[in-house]
Length: 138
Image (tube, rainbow, N blue to C red; front, side, top):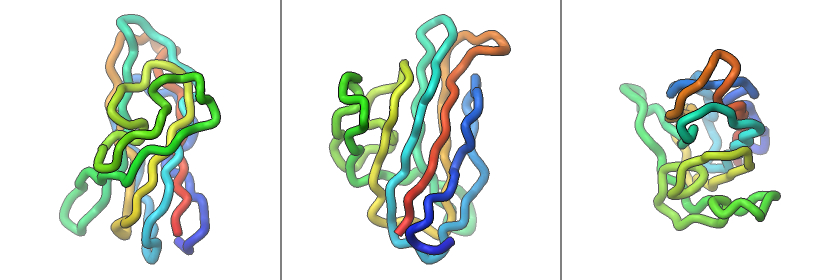
C-alpha cells in the first residue's frame, strides 16, 4: 500500500456481534489516521460498541494505542471530543451508543493492521451497529 492512500478497513455493514476486519497490508506506511463512521444504531438493552486498531507482528495480533482521538464533524455528541493520547478505542474512553464519526491518529503502524470491535446489546436480525472504517496512511 502506497502512502497517501485511504484504504477500507471495514466496508459499511450491519454488525450485531464482536468481530474483526480482515488484515490490511500497509507495508511502507509510517503512520496515519483511522476513521470510523457509525451510521446507525438499533437494538434494546442499551447497545454499546467499542472499536480499536490491531497490528500484526508476524506471530499474532496486538492492540495499538493511538496518539489522540480527533474531533469530528458532529460536535454535538459529547463522546466525540478529543481524547488523551495512549487510549486504545478509536472514539476515546467512552463506548459508542449512537451514530457518529470518530477518528484517531497512529504515529507508527506495523506492516499489517485490522479493525477489531466489541458489541453488546440485544438485537433482532435487522438490528445492530452499521459502520465503516477507513485508514489514511502516510
